[in-house]
Length: 209
Image 1 (spheres, one colour):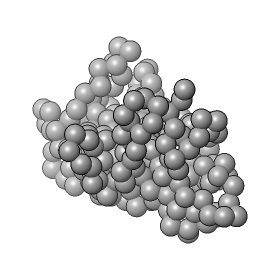
Image 2 (cartoon, rainbow, N blue to C red; image 1 turned 90 degrees about the vertical axis):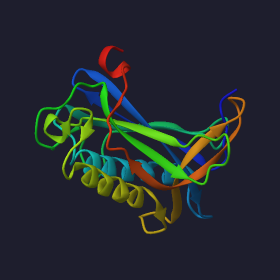
Image 3 (cartoon, rainbow, N blue to C red; image 1 turned 60 degrees about the vertical axis):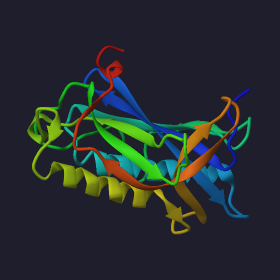
Image 4 (cartoon, rainbow, N blue to C red; image 1 turned 180 degrees about the vertical axis):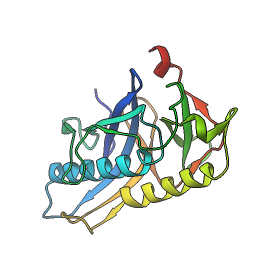
């Protein structure tokens, strides 16, 4: 049986870092209003993710990072919609990072923590964002203004992802962290803020697979 979590759609941003794939999971609580089709809302949220991911992360990381699309599976039911979107009216993918300098190897990544109101024994979520450049680091940490720069990008990203009825469709959405108990059911908590760690993290599979 597939995982079912009411009102949550699991999006995944996809791309490449040099010659290897990367993926970042983006769980969103979607509350469609009475006249909205849920699948239309999902398509619109995917459009927003494309715009935000390309602008906020793509504007900071190096050209070795390439963003190619957003896929999804709707966890709202066992028969939830699945799909893939590779463009929006505002952004044609693929999009390469536009930050200056040589891009670090794919195993190096920004660690971005998803902070919310989780209780005891419930882990907060995290993203590993590849594409940091040599000019942005000294040893294993971000230098100079780059921690603040990426933190501002993360703050703007969270604000841009969450919707309160101001889009083409009238719906609400919130970035969440999913917590599973048995692999089939679970719960979620809303993300209140994103926190960028100044010390780099690693994802070794992005180097060798």
